[in-house]
Each structure stands twice: as C-alpha cells, then as structure tokens.
Image (cartoon, rainbow, N blue to C red; front, top):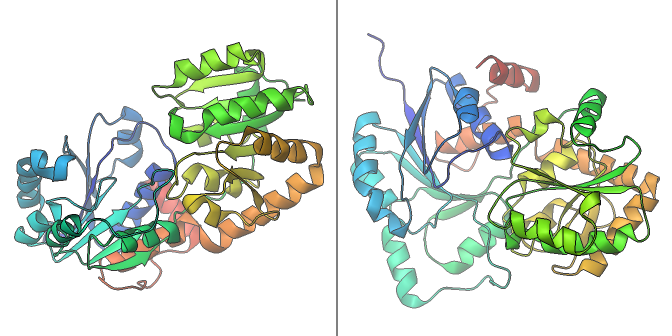
Length: 400
C-alpha cells in the first residue's frame, strides 16, 4: 500500500456554478500541488454545478461540502471537524468568509501544520482602512491565533486587512492569475449569431453577479446616453442574480432594451466566446472589489477596460494606458469614457496591448499557482522551484 501523500484542504464559502476565473485558478492550483506530490480536498458551501465537478475531477482532488459556513463557522464546526479527521490535511486554507472563524483552532487541534486565510473579500463602498473596535479586535486575534499567514489577492485587500487589526498573522500578497490566449474569430462569429448581434456592432461587455454592488444600473444609464451618439453599439450583460429582472425592466424603461443583451448565467464564458465577441470591457462596480477575475480575463484577451477607480481593481489599470478609471455611480463619466473608446480605434488597440503586457508580467495563472504552492506547502514568503513551465503547466491542466 502506497504511503498517504500530504494533503491540502481548501474551504471556500461559496459553490462553483460556472467555469470562470476562480474555478480555473483552483484547477491550476491542484495540478501544481499534484506535481509536487500533494493531494487536495476542496470544500464548498452550497450546490456545486455538474460542469465544475467534471472540470476539476481528478484522482488527486476530492470534493466535499460544508454548508452554513457563516456565523463564525460554529454551525458547521462538527462537519468540518469530521472532514479534518477523515482527510488529516497537512495544510488548511479558508476563503470567501471573514477571517473571524473557529476554523483555525479546529485545524490546529486536528494537527494541521500550516493554516492560512485567503482574503478575497470585497469591501463596502465607504469602508476605510482603519482599526475595528477594541473588543472585536481582541476576539479576532484569539480566533486567528493559529494562523500561519493571511494571503490577500491585492494590495488593497492586504491594506484593509492589516488596518482592521483582527489578526497578528503576517500578511502576504499574491495577485489573481488568468489564462492567456488569443481571440478566436470563430467563437466571435458563433457567439454573435447565437445572440443576434451583428458583426458590425461594437460590443461593450460586463460579466458579473447581477446585484446592485456591481454597478449595472450605472452601466445602463451610461448606455442610454451613449446610444444617442452611436447607433451601432450593443451592450452585453452576462450573468444572473436577484437584480436581473430589475435591470431588464430598467433597460425597457430607458428605451434601450433592443440594444442590450442579457444572457443570464453562461457556464463557461471563456469557451462560449464572451470575450472573443467583446470590443470593450466595462466594470463600474460600486463596492470596493478585492480584485476582478473578469477584468483580468478581458485584459488577457487584449481588450481595453473601463473600471471604477476604487478597491483592488484600480491596481490593475494604469489610467490612460491599459484602461480608463471612472468614479463610482457616475453615468456621465462612464459614458464619456465609453464614447472615447468607441470613437478611437487606435486607443482601443494600444490600451489592449498595454493590459495584455501587464497580464504577462504579473498575472499569468501558471505563475500565480506556483507562488501559492511555494507558500502553502513551504510556510514561507517565497516560491518553490517552478513546478512546470508554461506549456507543461497548461498541458497538465488539460490532461487532468
């Protein structure tokens, strides 16, 4: 009988419903861990899509479910404890919740050698980098005492976490990573035919969960103004969510519903052709997003981007070079930025090229997965030897 391989358990307070940036990161991470002899256990909260199960399926990956991860984690503590005893992970990671959970102590008691919080949390629009109340900081530091480190996906997230003072663990920054590929003309044609979009139309896209914080209302009001100047523009809104019916009504009330395409949830936006069909990517979020996979995916396809000048998204865009930053809730400023990009083809090209270069330098998914492996299995602020070159890493993901 072969000896048990070391194991990483990653507890995520969400359930994958599509194959997007986060899901691809998890795939690359578990493949990179397997390359150095580690197994992975991924524990989600909620119903996991069949598409994701098939996508992540591998002999070295186990999928578990831990529901009700909120409320400091006490409601799910028993289930987590059973899984910790069952899999005996060497490294434990949790994400998509507050750092204040009972998870670190359960992992420590279960014998985990290293325990990490992966901070991917966006902040509310007006939240500032400042200490929380004394009693909350004391409780937080007690709950997080076993942590090895906190890994943030942007400098913004790291700054907010450090300022809050809920943990004395060291803070590290590892950026989000995305796949790099060329635009596929065939996908562009097929997607536009599927949704009745002319090949001559300029397509402006936003991919998001349809909630107020994503700024879709601002997008629609900017669209109304822009369409008064440019007739050959279509707005592509990809995703579902509780506000989707509201946004459809808003588009109709503004008289622009014929120029707005609501696709609902697309299980694999990349493979379906969302970014291939897009000319300009826009994300006018209201809240301070930690970082946006969709924005980075657009940049990896050499698309110019327009994002709100807030949170971690602003770190990914160099104003006037790789994209345009706009104030939140400002439809007029957003319209002006869109107008500029719709009008100036060379600006679209140059911004797309600058953004693509940024992805190559800082956000290649292969590099990011290797950085995580270096930290998670080594417990240090550094990297292991590269587990694979770019082509080898991509081939390993495809084979798995």
